[in-house]
Length: 88
Image (cartoon, rainbow, N blue to C red; front, side, top):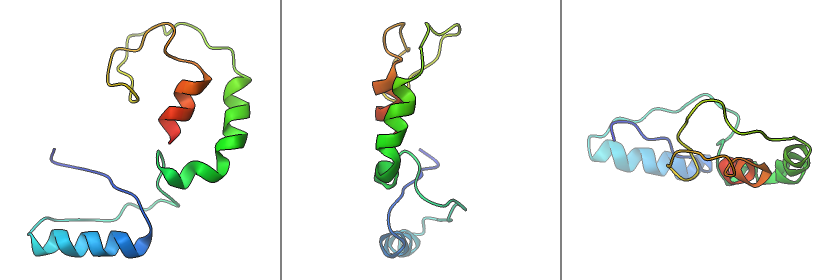
């Protein structure tokens, strides 16, 4: 891949960036409060699960590739557990 996003604590990210630069790999930092779709989301997962379970899901009207499975999302693939897996 030509672009990759990683997340972690700042010290680890700085060390990773330094290692990349030593290998002549460019790095940059995104302006974000935390790593979305990462363990940084754990503190909100309980409240998020409640919201996800309160939603009535329907069959997707358009075909799309799941970011969880990398397959075409099917009628029964999209439910509250899908969104929890997508978040972490």
